Image 1: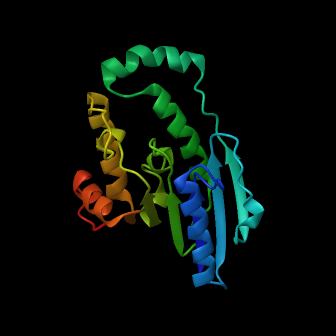
Image 2 (image 1 turned 90 degrees about the vertical axis):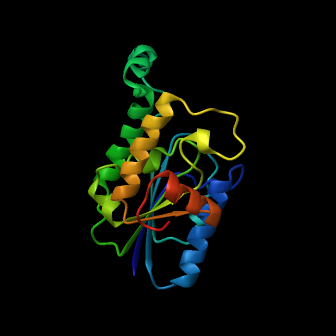
Length: 197
């Protein structure tokens, strides 16, 4: 069995997703001790990861720039108000998409795409990429953030365009999962998915 895991957070502390992802890799190795487990780790900031402790066969680490160029930031001030799309968000997501598009995924039996944080850049970056049709996409939190339980943020017009984009990703994905059964139920309905989360 050959597994490809595309990760956004493998930090050893300070983040729930990092701890969950590390645990996932450990349990996957325990369940399939003879399997091939390759990890592509895409992160946007320096962090303490201790990747050498993870029970994987091959680890490739990438670093994306979290700060958009000044020209993109300036253009974004007007652009998102006119077109309901954030140029800064699109620029950031495209950095992930360029990396994911180059990953040779065909030889793997199972592909996991595991996002982190509230931006879901990793998941959004897979939109219209061929890898998505074979991938198991894991949601750690709801997206957009306005649907996060306990948030005081009200949905904006921009959020509805974000939601529409995520609905397309979910529609193209092989399987979608989340970290909690109630959240799976809610996301399945929020994204209008015909497939069970």
